[in-house]
Length: 317
Ligand code: A2P
Image 1 (cartoon, rainbow, N blue to C red):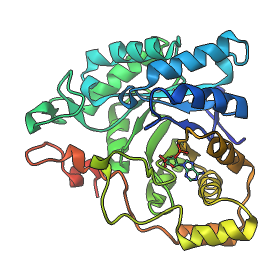
Image 2: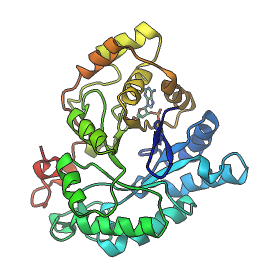
Image 3: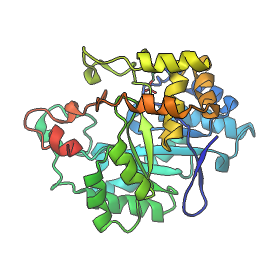
Image 4: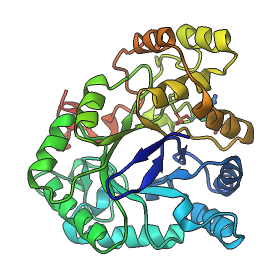
């Protein structure tokens, strides 16, 4: 397994298990199975609705002696309804209680989008808070308080453009160690990855396999097929790998962290084995050539008529 070595000495396993869309009732088994296979990085968020069950599975593993806390990495995220500075630490404490942990390895600002306190998903434009009402700089100050209180070891962001990271760095006392964004062969994020590498920020790739199990409100009819794209299938065929393994190996080989979701024991194993695979230069070039700047999670759900957020000011593109 490849690790990112962070300032301060932490070692962060590059391949982790995503838990978005892992249903309660399934996720505990998936975590237990993943631990058995060797996964030591778990990516969570309270908005996924499954942190209590993940906490149960992690504590079962720790109680049985199979796993010590310092042997695994847990990331979770601050939801959009908790962006006001004073709400950050209480939100993190709720997540820690659900996950049954004393600290997180990494806490991320989930989106550069704020809702009124208590609003999980806005149903009207008034339920958003604008960047003036809830400036990211103040949210970040709350993240720094969480770090200083020892509730998390590192802090970072998610769904942030280069422009938003640059703005954050103007006022930040502590730097983000990670930016988690959608990233796969159809959305290679080359410019953002180069910038993150320069800045010593790990880019974590979410929806690396195209998240086919997304809820309908995050789907479009005319989506391109990632796992069945001919370039991927040819490379898979040539080496005797699966399509998923080819995509994950590409992600790891280009220096991103990657968090495929699965609750299926066979695919959990298959995905973990991708960390042992090496693609040749020709494979990497061919996959790089698939980039078409296509977002499966395009953010339109934050941009209804009247919202302070537009696709333009969300992605800065
Ligand atoms: P399942 O949980 O049944 O394995 P993403 O990580 O991009 O969000 O994609 C997750 C989706 O891809 C889920 O539907 C998951 O289903 C499926 N999946 C996970 N691993 C693989 C794989 N190796 N090959 C094909 N589909 C996969």
